[in-house]
Image 1 (cartoon, chains in turn brown, red):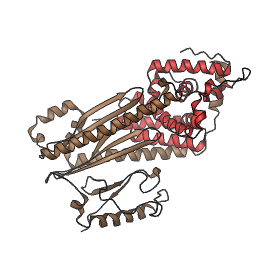
Image 2: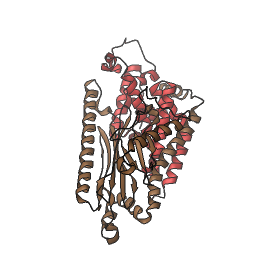
Image 3: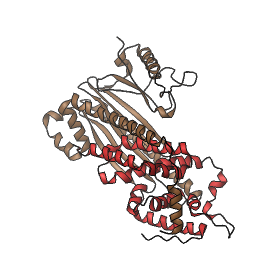
Image 4: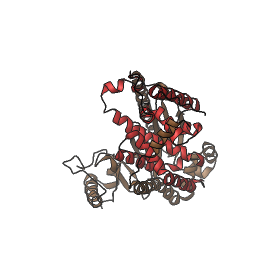
Length: 284
Length: 168
């Protein structure tokens, strides 16, 4: 190696590392494990609760050829399920896009199925188009301000879904889009379907006419409980924190079929708190 | 269905524990601030572990983690650069006219390169990575990495007066 580079390397390597690095690294590993488990347990508990049927859902999602094969099995063919209809990856200089898009099948309510599937695909397509337009614009701006197009670091867009609950009666899933640029930003869309009535579920259906009160009391109480931990920071109502839920507050059903209301990052506290979820017990 | 999953998590954790000093130094060399560098490393670790199940091929874990780390570093780097005056951004600092007698130290000169150019130089010379690995870690193809490195070396030569040839 060139002696000057040798010297630069020595200077680089001599950068001091702070004492708390290894502590922070371990804490970050724990947090990463926790988030990973969260993603996995939802899938696993679903699998145990529904035994073979849920496993098939996962397998169907995993492989299109398997999906085709399962379709031929008469018993399974009659089950409502969520399958991946679109899965693609674009990887070029401007953008890295990973998409896994779900659709409903065999709910027994064709109209609802079509409506939801249509909505998912138009909504997600619009979101991706928008993100792509932003990626293009920012690249143009980058080039216009003297950047070499070859040096541009692509935008990363991730669209994925998670099945939160599936029983004979309910189907609940969340579609998530993450765009990584100046910082990672995640948007999510929740879908909850009553397979018996063929309608989208509301919190009123699940919790009765006093649903808002029920949810507000329980969320406030859980915020209070969580605030005991000094690592959790919630804004007060005056600071713009929790002031009651919205008419269309997003929620999903957990594996026990209980509604879980979700607040976006920054809604209740600083961004480091991430999305906030609260499991709500029926009030009766 | 996925027997390799626990192994991947284990491999990633080992890679993180062994390389933490390297990761911190790399982050620090971009963001130049101790707390910001710690943030970058922390966010990269959390993100990588929570997504480790998406990696199929264990041999890619190392470069995959670098890619996440570099992305996080770039986010901070860009955010901070946005706070700099517009005038500074408009001028590519490497092209600034300089007193012909003035020569920059090589290390300082690397700082003046664009983000992707810095990255190639640091990974190649300070982290001893192969060009193929750099391509994976930066999400660029091998030819782009080669030309980026070549261009960076030429700029460094202009700034320092040193002929730093690479023998790939």
